[in-house]
Length: 311
Ligand code: SF4
Image (cartoon, rainbow, N blue to C red; front, top):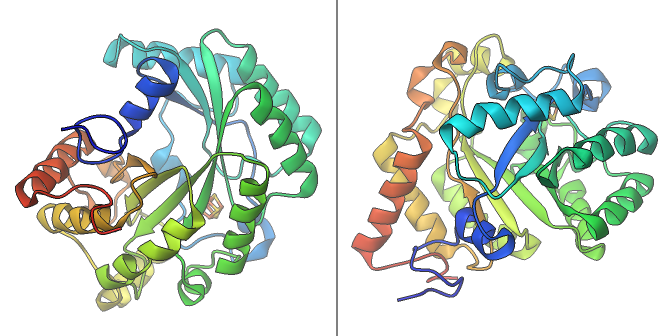
């Protein structure tokens, strides 16, 4: 039986999306273009309390290399793991990738698009870092390449956003979605599950709001507590503020979540993986992502349910 999105998987997968739109697998290649983050500089107190960019940045990625060199290194790295690719997206991942003048963005993104087999761009940024000039430039890019803006939503609750020193509120997030939607720029909503004082009930009751934001893609990360972060100190002092999943609980929770998520939204990731050497609290590390995906699909099959069946 094929589901609404056109294949037999029980959720609307990114691999299905890539097959449908690009004819096969697309690998994202992380890039650090040397942008900074306004939240680390001024807006709050040293940035989000969980921030540890180095934990998510592959070792071969360095802002001291130019964009082309980073992308070529990325291709070599992934060619060994996934020899069959239909192309690549340059993934401007580190820090806030619209935190620069349009001239600089034009230079960095333009360079990426000149590299062989780069079929599009993914630009990760904050909801409060989308000026009209930047939006105009992104609109222009959107007409000539496959562009996705990955927006750090993280939480839909102002108390949480203030608590983690996020430096913006939910109104700002909603406005960013509206501006990007008005310009028909595809958006990936990045969400963190496990922030202080939130629980599985919080996240399940947030799904309606996520559906209303209408992102084309969504990415879930369980909170990971990294060494030398403010949240490490908070967790040590107030562990009761944090909901920790076991892998099995997370699988059941994700099945509950998917049942309520709009079937139109493509799910890019269910969980995060970071090198264990960065983790301050190892029990936040779940399974490898491919294992997690298989287990979530098995759970949906066992239940006889699928993404959006309760939407
Ligand atoms: S927005 Fe991202 S880079 Fe900036 S402080 Fe927060 S987690 Fe760190």
